[in-house]
Image 1 (cartoon, rainbow over the protein chains, first blue to last red):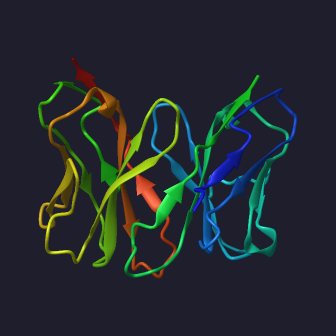
Image 2: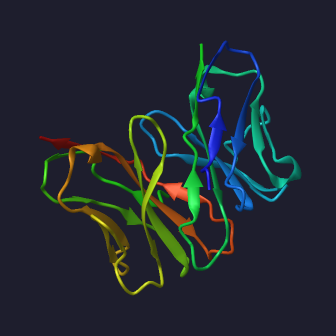
Length: 116
Length: 117
């Protein structure tokens, strides 16, 4: 169990550029989540995958955002035509649905995006 | 409607004292789970403690305990014998629905805890 890994840790980009983040979940976890956290706020749910299927998307996820999880392993979150309002910490989490481990929900260290 | 409310934006406590961080929640589900996470300045979300809605005993994990009052819909975190390393943001979160469901979490706005030497 090496934890949830996110890359890069920090990303600075110019407004209008595209960015892509990667998340590698804990290998035995079949669920993967993306959250966004703006300064001074708690994380907000963006989307989640069960295996390779994207089962739910928040209305926060505009059409400039796309997430994939090919083969049900790692996931990518892409933001096209970035805006300054996209500046935030993007957190990935993974979990499994075992009744005996309801707290099996692990976050990565996040990718901090700054749009200048 | 806000589902998780943390009314204390900041708390200042002397080292070795106990501290209670407040959390109230709102749900119509019978099955739900409540989490507390710690977020140091480095940004990672560190799981502290979990309470299921059907759990009869209050959860405890080392120096952390959760004061679960279901009728009042509160799930306060108690940290005993605080340490300087406890200084961080603390988030209360709720998972609505059964474990087999989506498991997405709704977070409060957090409480910044500062431990003074």
